[in-house]
Length: 476
Image (cartoon, rainbow, N blue to C red; front, top):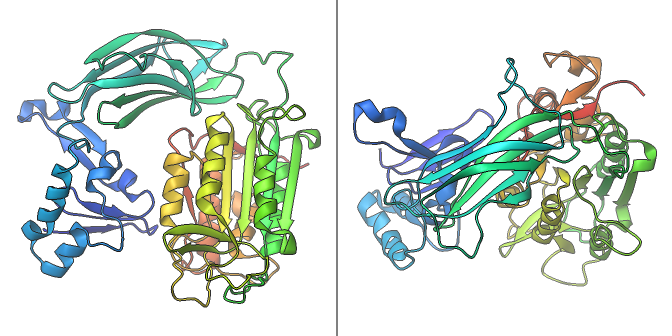
C-alpha cells in the first residue's frame, strides 16, 4: 500500500507510507510505528534493532501545515514517487537530519550489580545503587556523543564528557544516588552524533532510610478556570470554576507524597486558585514565577509534586498555542490568553529540577471564530516528550461535555475515582491507588458517562512508571 492508516479504539492513530513518512496523534508515533533494521538473514532475526519512529521525527513526520507535505501531495496525486521527490530534495539540503541508516545503537544496557529478587522487583536498600552500563553504536552508524544516567528524569551522573570526541562503545560501573522518593525510575540515556536520544529504564522500590534532616516534600496546586469570558467569541463553560476548585481540594487530600508513600499533610500543601475574573494572564504568570528560588522561598526539587488544573479554552491562533483568560479583549484579533507554549516551558523547568508534574486539562470547547483551531495534539506532544509532564486531557478529539450534576464529566470521573462504583474496576485494592489504575478508571468513567462519545486520555513521559502509587485510597 502507498499509504496506511492505523486507528486505535482509544482514538490514537498513525498514518504512514512505506518509506517512513508519517503523521500521528500526540503519541501515536511512540506507540504504534517504528523502524526495524534487520541483519539480512533468518538466523539473525533477533539481532535486528527497533526504534519507535518519533526518534526520527525531524526527517519523517509530516504534520498538518500551511505548506504541502509528502502525505498531502500523495493524497492529491496518488503518485508516491512524485509525492516524495520534493521532500527528498529538502532532506538532501539538510544532511544532519537523522534517519535509521545513520543513527543506530547495537546495545544500550543498564543492569544492577546485585541480582534482583526472585519476584523480579528491584529493591534498593541503600541511598546509592551500583549499576553496570554498556552502550555500543552499530557499525557504520553515528557515534555516541553523550551518555548519562537519570533518576526520575533528573540527570545524576554524566558518563561521557561533552568535550570529548564521540565514541563507538563504552561500558563501566557507576554508583547512582537514587534520592528519597520511594518509586524510582533509573534510565541510561544515550544521544548520538545525529541528536537521536534513546533510553533504557529500570524501575525499583527505594527502601533506603530517609535522612532525618531531609526537608519535607511540597505539594503545589494551581487551579485555573472560568465559566464566562469578556471576549464573547468564547463560549460559556458550565461548571468550569467549580471543577477547578473541587479538583484542587480533592487532589490536595489524596495525592501521594513520593517520599513518604502516604498523603501530604496540610502543612506540606499550598493551593493557588485563579477562577472567574481572577483568571488573568499576569496573575497566572506570577504564580509560576513564585515557584522560582528566592531568598525567602527554597527551590522545588526531587520529592515535590506540582499539579495544574486548567478549565478554560485552548486555541491555536496563527500557529500560537493559547489558553484563554477572562479579562477584557481590548479590541484585539486574538482573545486574551496566556501562551500554552510558555506554560509548557515553565513546567519543564520544574520537571528538570526533579519535581513530579501533573496537568489536568479540560479545554477543548466551542467558540465563534472559525479561524481559531482547536487541535490540542501539538501541545500535548510538547508536554509529554519535551516538558516531561503527566498530562490528563478531558477530550483530545472533539468537545468535552457537562453531565448536569454540578461538574463536567471529566472532573466527575476524577472526583469519583475512589468511590465504590469505581473501585470495583481495578484489580487489587489497597491503601494506595496506582497511576495505572487511576488513569484507567477515569478514562472508563468518562466513556461510560458519555456513551463512548468522549475519550479522556493520559499521556505519560518516559521518566514515569504507570505503577507508581498515585492516590491515597484510605479514608481521611
